[in-house]
Image (cartoon, rainbow, N blue to C red; front, top):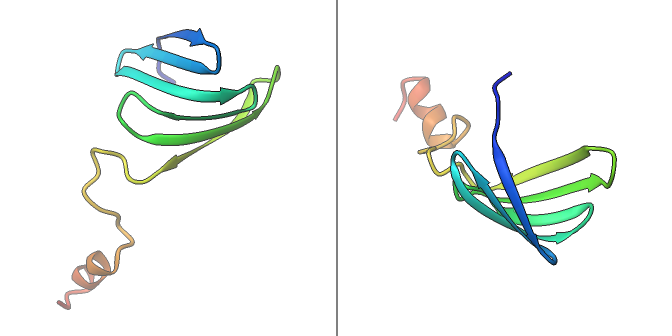
Length: 82
């Protein structure tokens, strides 16, 4: 497990997150937030306030990804056909 560092500033329902990877932001209420990570990925986070339990779903691809292994094109090339 690696160490993480971040500094969070709240402005009402808005939150700005400063981390080693850059600056991100989010909007929401306790238990439900939507935002953009420091790497540019959009996300939805749902949780139970005060427990530390939450679920996060990232939308779209990671900006560093070029494709997915399950795309039909990749499957065709994997078995040798065009």
